[in-house]
Amino acid sequence: MKKILITGGAGYLGHILTQKLISKGYFVIIIDPLIFGQQLYIKLFNHPNVEFIVGLAGDSYVLKNILKNVYAVIHLSGLSNDPTCELDELLTKKVNVDASIILLKMSKDAGVKRFIYASSCSVYGFTGDKVVTELSPVNPLTAYARSKVINEELINKEQSDDFTVSCLRKSTLFGASQRMRFDLVINTMTGSAMSNGNITINGGAQWRPFLHVCDAADAYIHILEADKDIINGQIYNVGDNGNNYKIIDIAKMVINIIPNTILIQKDSPDQRSYHVNFDKINKINWNTKISINEGIIEIKKMFDSGIVKNYRDINYFNIKRMITYLNI
Image 1: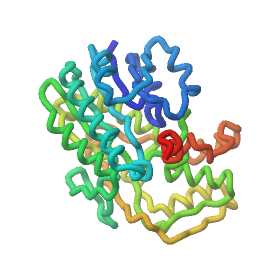
Image 2: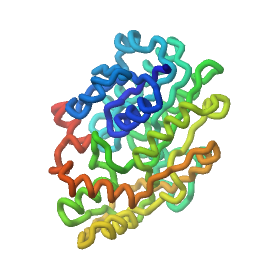
Image 3: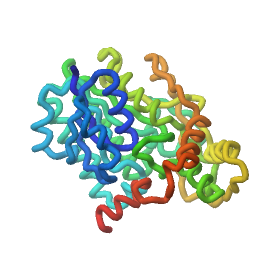
Image 4: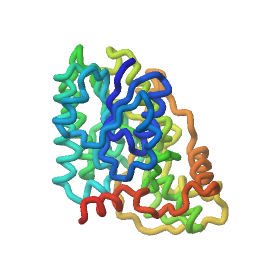
């Protein structure tokens, strides 16, 4: 049974990825600080094929004790969106970059065979209407995006015949998860429409690519199991060419599913806009399965069923929870 270490394995994406790996017969080691609480993860704590460690990905003492006989590391952890990373750039460097350097070196030294990194399409910054590929120049406009570019470069330098590395530039995630987030565009719009009867957007002409969180988990598993000679040292945009949309178009999709929602448009201070091509990952036989409409509907059902009662709870918003966690 292969052991997979997931940093941030209790997060929005990590929780789903962990469950999928367990169902495929892997043994999963999770390291996560559990900033958002532990009640959701009781079942995972008790699963025979899961080892759950409350800690940080850059803790060399913890890593020394858990990396032995690990086949692959999937590195998801870190401050995970633009507003959160802008709180403190020195903290962002420590959590997103310095910790990654420690994890990368110790993984390679321990004989880990694969290292898969969670990057982001936000590294492209502003592209206007130009469609970008993995060969396009990066233009990171935020501390978050800059940390992703730095880590990609560090990680790809470590590739070897015995150490397969890949970086996945994910689209903006959406969809339901047991560790839910409402600070992601589609999730936020749907939550606001269901709770407030309105959607507020800043601008609307910005392009974003979108990816269901379950499809994202499947992408990591696909790379985990792919021929190493194909994926070693490679960067992949992860998403679907048909899921590039302007923000205004996403708002209209939500309103179509949740009628009588009022749209409020404001001037946009956000200059990030990127239209992304996903041919490269499609050519290694990975494709998305879940549409944006399906994602909106499943989030709506979370409200209809009472699973979500207060979508403004700070545990649904990374930046709000980090502010209270750091006491700043």
